Image 1 (cartoon, rainbow, N blue to C red):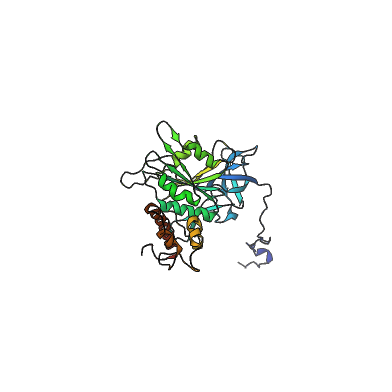
Image 2: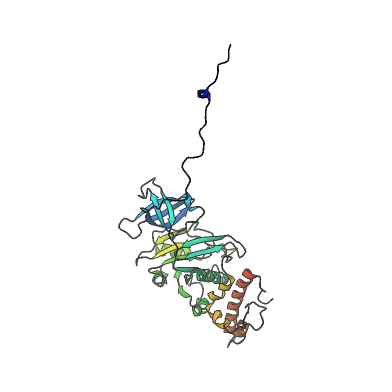
Length: 348
């Protein structure tokens, strides 16, 4: 059988996979996006409040748009949404833009971890919740939180709980002189004292609550926001530590003056400061910063620094109680300095 002659109609040309349209980095402006407040994060889904404080305020669920890349969205963020922002069951919007943040609270796992974790955005103040007993207060943890708040440009409030178990005078004397505001609360079966003072400190602000597990942080939140239903736990009798009850950060509106929000965060075991410039550490200790002005030029303020004014300040204390308090302050600062710079340990 003779072979048929082939012509051009027998040749199949596969279309090129490359698009004829040139690629562009230009992204949509999303000029019609809705503004929203992020109130919660859960496994890649974000609970947001669309048009917060506006006439069309509503709760919606959103996901992060691909163009945001690895930018982390956290409670307190103001974001722009597109897609279905109605908040109806089954609806899903897209977060396409994070509005410029006014403050960012960060922490690291420890003082050598290069990866910093953003906790919340746009908070006005950090509320360090500390129990006066059960578990015992940890002043080094408080100092670390003060440093982190200072670095973030936030104010600091120390909320002391369980005042029915111990006297708050020692912690007041340690922190009020350096400009840290202090409120004292206690809860009994019949009453919750100090709650009005705490409400006054929170009024009109966005506050992020941080503290060890078991210090009563979620109990405070439930008292401030009755329908919050944050889980509460107990302190282990053996370890003296609390059990994690809050598993994710959530922003809650506090009844009362407009603009009052609290962001409850999970209990923390540590508060790393790898992201904080060591030169900024002294600024968080206002009392020591004033004393350090008398130090010689180039003083490192470490335990082995010659002629450091901090040592003279401790030695010149008028009585034993004052000397003990000053020693605790200087040691706390120097231990933070050690963890960030590798300077000599206090007393080494």
